[in-house]
Amino acid sequence: MNAPITLPLWLVVVLVALSSWALLVLLAAPGMRWFFRRRINAVIRQVGASLQVELPSFKLTRRQVLIDRLFHDDRVQAAAAQQVRAGGLSQAEVRRRIDRYAREIVPSFNAYLYFRIGYALARGLARTLYRVRIGYADQEALARVDPRSTIVFVINHRSNMDYVLVAFLAAERTALSYAVGEWARVWPLQQLVRAMGAYFVRRNSGDPLYRAVLSRYVQMAAAGGLTQAVFPEGGLSINGRLRQPKLGLLDYMLKGFDGAEPAGRDLVFIPVGINYDRVLEDRTQLAKLGGAARAPVGRARALAIGVGFVVRNLWQALNGRWHRFGYACVNFGQPISLRQYVAERGLRLPQLGDAERHAQVSAFGELLMERIGAVLPVLPVSLIASVLVAEPERLWSALELKAQALARAQRLQRGGAHLYLPRADMDYAFDVGLRMLTLRGLVQQEEGLLRAVRAELPLLGYYANAIAHLPE
Figure 1 (cartoon, rainbow, N blue to C red):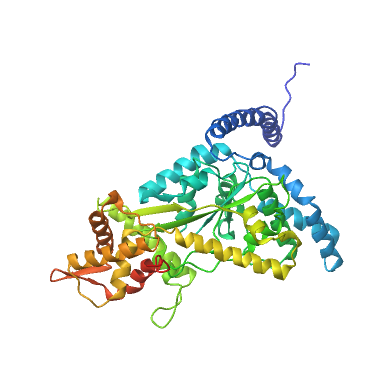
Figure 2 (figure 1 turned 120 degrees about the vertical axis):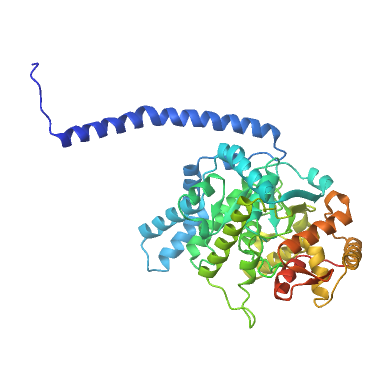
């Protein structure tokens, strides 16, 4: 009975591995889940008490539940049946594709990661790179928004910092959900993006089944009160000007909205204008323009520009010569209630045919871009750049340039533009803007006079274009 038993080494290794796995699954994993769930629930309680917009149950629903709900949705199943009838795919294959699309789209929001870690990182990064300011907000109109409404922030897209900046500034009001392109579907970034509540979107997908799944997710999220941030332009500004809106996500939201249902949530769109004294991707975006004077850029060149930018700034930081990139300013405009909008025009969007609905969505998209443009901040660099590109060959004294910038600022203010003047001091704002342009080599001195550097006129034009749409 007490005789020793000899086991081969490989069997001992297998037994130890299986025992360790059982210990991990039965004891350690449940304990860790309990620990983190307790921390997450504590964060939800704390945040829920302070948010000005309620944290909807949709955002806190387990990811698998949302996937199942999306998979079994009547409209998604109708699209699947139509795909099977069209031939070429079996029912099993269509169902597998629906499941894959649903898992690809649906996020896995983690309140602790968003409000404790993500917020701290976003705040730290934004404040390290910029002097971050909220220049203007229509506080009275924002306070009148029904807290049960579904809020959609519609934002101009100048930089990838927009995601960080708006999430940081809005975190005291609500948790945002972004639509993110396929560029972020790399490990481990996609896991982080999902945990922050964002969902992935395949741009320009021609698969009707994918569009049906994405459309229903967007509509379910809107009906569930999920606060979203949408960039109607669909991509970064290439020349600094506002782009024409792309209406895919907006169409999904609007065609599922029936303003005649009194128990349903209102959709409230809040225009957000963002501007920077320096856009991190400015040269990369300009390089995409092509033309006779500038060859089209490929991904390799864009990557080289980006890497060079990072290396230069790290070297400056190590040598104590690095400065923040000026001001980054965000303005919040007057909310637009979709319920009020459709009621004033007598519209029932779900009952419209595709052509008529697309026309209405296009008109609404133009209105949103107009409102975004109206609240886009005028910052020192854009103001001075607009003066310089108007007379690119002129030699300016500092006093002449300041007087011209002041005159343009006054004209913009009379036209209703929102200027952000640091310290409410035009002289200081002028000095800040001119210093930024001089440090970057966009403006040079010749015998005590100032002149725009000819080779950098496209970059000056990029910053001037940010406010070129504003009336004077």
